[in-house]
Image 1 (cartoon, rainbow, N blue to C red):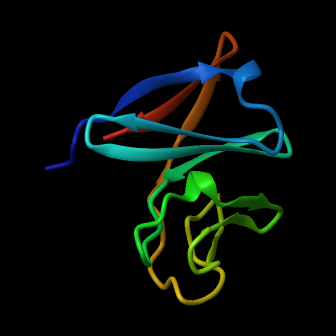
Image 2 (cartoon, rainbow, N blue to C red; image 1 turned 45 degrees about the horizontal axis):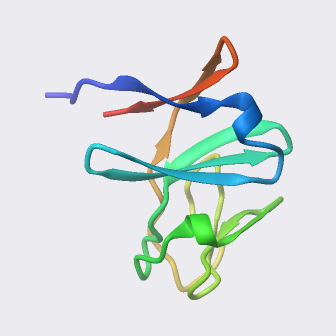
Length: 106
């Protein structure tokens, strides 16, 4: 049976400028929101390798780089781009309505 998802209102568009990341908690999930060149992405924010908080990492064209062991994750797919991380991050759908950013969580 598939879990029911819901849209969580996170912030206004003006609160997440290009090149910035925002962390938020929703129920038991720790989620990252990133604005890469005007496109908003959302993934889990805890690195799959060593449980570091990716919101304190580096955002670049390649994705978000973990501050602990420097694995970079693609924001669109969640896939690690280099070792030591091998497991992907969960990604979340994002929508913008009336200048507010929403993330679909299950």
